[in-house]
View 1 (tube, rainbow, N blue to C red):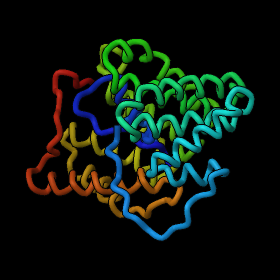
View 2 (view 1 turned 30 degrees about the vertical axis):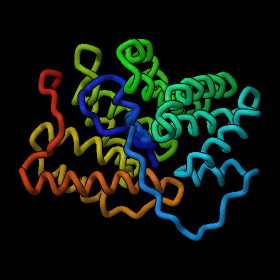
View 3 (view 1 turned 90 degrees about the horizontal axis):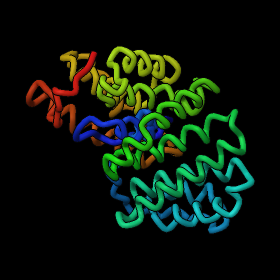
View 4 (view 1 turned 180 degrees about the vertical axis):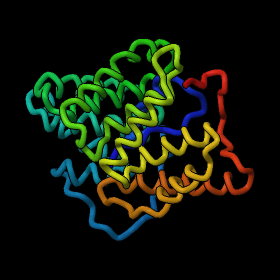
Length: 280
């Protein structure tokens, strides 16, 4: 699944990744979006092993687990590409869902981890993608300076990930680039036509990409194609939850359900539109 990218209150370059991105991921990208944290319901699951970072990351709705996973991966991130990109992924989560006072530091750490992954294995897509995701979240959340600093790099890292493997992580880079073209003002390279192309290609690869479905619904609503947008949002609601992406999937489904209700009640999506930044 594509990592989710966040819901937009306005259009700006960082929004393209901070979703997710994401998300997809995600997406995401997305994109990407940070996405609202999902309220965790206590259950009887066994606590993850403190020595297994993958198990700890699956328990990431518990911030302590995500931090422990990041700490384990950080020990080898300078020399091991798997540890480097997984650290970047964990930092993206912590930077968009963790305690507010630690988010910027987490994302900056994620950028460094992504750069390490790219340096260790430049021909793998994961480092490029998670580097872009962390830069996108910084650009979205921490002001104009961060947005200008990372604008070009976000797109180039996504394009590199896409060129290496368009199908990687269920077309995450394709979906995130779609979100990038949708969110970025046309003056800086945004294009609704290119956005739609990327998003539909992502769905051709993975018809269950919540990130691509959600972003394409955004575009269609803005264009007045509400009937198709409603169909896409209903798909987001109806899709089964992927255990590996359960927190993100639940958030996507809840948000899509709320948007469907808004569409049914008013005939349009009650979002904060900025029509001055619409582009072809």
